[in-house]
Image 1 (cartoon, rainbow, N blue to C red):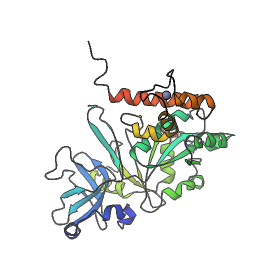
Image 2: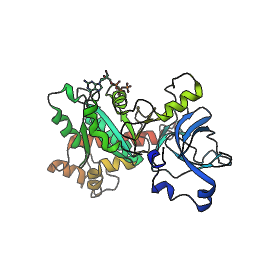
Image 3: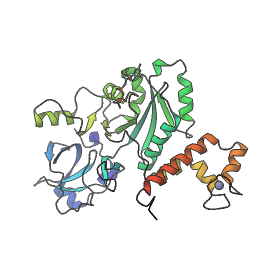
Image 4: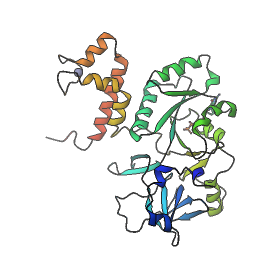
Length: 327
Ligand SMILES: Nc1nc2c(ncn2[C@@H]2O[C@H](COP(=O)(O)OP(=O)(O)OP(=O)(O)O)[C@@H](O)[C@H]2O)c(=O)[nH]1
Ligand SMILES: [Zn+2]
């Protein structure tokens, strides 16, 4: 396995100092376990400690998908290279803490199915999340074989954002899923987002090579031939890329997603700049440019409702601590 096959590129190689290039080597974090991580480099696969000597609790600690510098003699982790992006969520145990889920994803597939579960507002939420993380998003519509009107679903998805990539597949059929090959090529990392039952696992199985480095490493280690679902793992794909699980990202949290919301609803954000009052609620104030745009047909009431709903959720979660203070 070469570093390029693992996803190494100039964004990462340019971060090494000459000394580091002499004394360390880069490895990618393939899976995260309790107290240890499986890493793969140009010539090696091994387990190392995730703890970086001298790092504080607030410092960057390795998560799956990360590139890590390892001291070539001691094999101790030295530092995590600056990420392209990072999926994180609020810790279920302590909402003030954040939990890292996965790093360095090239493309996220936002998966939805062509049936009664299809929902534009839900797709929009996943897109907001992808924009917030700063990752390229492709909408993948599954169960195309179960509808007579596949183009209607694709059209509705494409209408969410100009230029949005939408691919429709039968997730069980390798020939159909081959449409996604362009994002799953050598060294490319993809992740999946989507509600329960839309076909994420089916898609993974169709895209995935029979065995992966990470699975082999885990097998060699625990000897059981299985790895539990609590383990975060990179899966090798047939086309040469990697697939990252995003456990815990299935439930959507829109806290601190203001940037993502502003990007997906940039037409509303833009119109709101012309409102007479800077704190306009776009309900009944005079000189409201957003209401004017809705009245003229330039913007729609349906998207206005979704925009205000998402913004309220975002603000609500963000200020949970300060709301409802007793007088
Ligand atoms: N006909 C058809 N069935 C599909 C397709 N994709 C998935 N299915 C079926 O839909 C069901 C749910 O698929 P899963 O892959 O388990 O869905 P998931 O998104 O992984 O669901 P969770 O694990 O709950 O998040 C399974 O019975 C699949 O066989 C498809 O493109 N066409
Ligand atoms: Zn307004």
